[in-house]
Image (cartoon, rainbow over all chains, first blue to last red; front, side, top):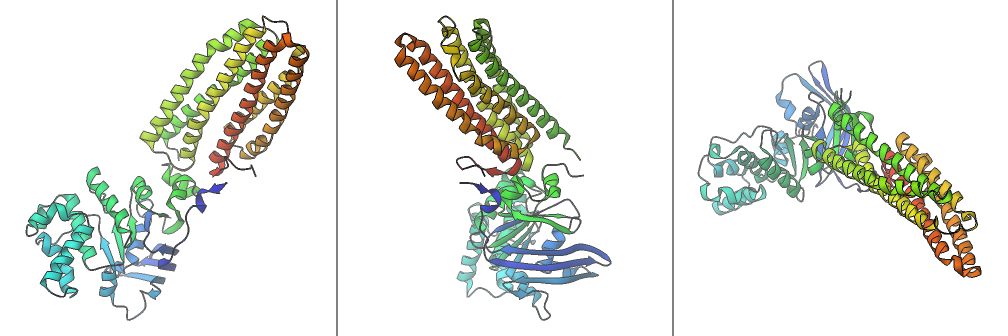
Length: 263
Length: 220
């Protein structure tokens, strides 16, 4: 029985498909010819040095870069085989389908309940008041926050700890029933215990969601993700099963980066 | 660029396992010499030195765990620490077998010598050469040499069966030699086991170099 690390995982159905993507901030090209298949209900981690383009790439997946003036995209990003850059794409409904969680938790200056209910209300997802409550509770449960906040749903979200605020933002993203969740360094400002909770949550959530996470923390990438993509200078250097990347990467550049020999 | 902290610790680890490898080789060589040259003083030296080897094993264990815990190595670094951690007890066991051969020498050297110890010296030469080659291949991370070496274990197994049959004949022809022959049988068995251990070291070198697990499979 001889097997290689690369052979241990089978490929799954593609949720997001990126082909020949180029991205420009004005004249500066930030992403060069990226192609990638992101499998459904898996966690994909993006790693790479600062400025390598991993966050920019993450933001192309739900067209968040559209909000920055002077940017330009070439190539194709399809989600469930729909090109999200096709003219006529409803960006608001796209972002509902592809939720996002940021490095710094950014709850609304409202109650815990209202933070989660907000997206449900404006999207008109709920049938009635009872249904709204159910949906808020489910989102908070899915974000592993319910038990900590169920007795103070009407308290301000700002009274929560940093880790709780971040999970509240995840609950807020989950409430509108997305299919994909993009996370941009969701735990970088949190202590180890809060970080662990977020990581456990990420692993739990992949039962139902496709998750893409940008992280500077290599151990975090190795702990939570099924596949890891290493970016450098706007290029995708390597995209492989995480256990391969951290045990036997294909590229010398990847090995240098993950072993701290990057110069 | 280098990773100064980790590189330094990996260098120390590499030095330590090479030193242990050298000590193990020396133990095997001296043990066989104590037998073939009927040198009981040398046999005692092998037994005394065994505690040094045990101590080196513990040091390498400690350092390997420390690197894993504090540096969280990845990729080749990780495979290197894992291979070293797995090769270390193998070397310690080879040294234990050398010690057992020295034990046998202490007894046999007080008995009349049996027929120039038949094929045993040759068998020991093959085992020692395989061990040296395996350690050299590990140092240079040459997995091709390791893969070739794995095939040579059959030579030792063959020699073992030959020695076994010869000793059996000696015991039947001359029942008075049974005690000595029985001790020599054990010596042959120790050498045969050393061949198996060398094979394990080779498999770990293939893992180090190629990230492939070939244990319990035919070497390709």
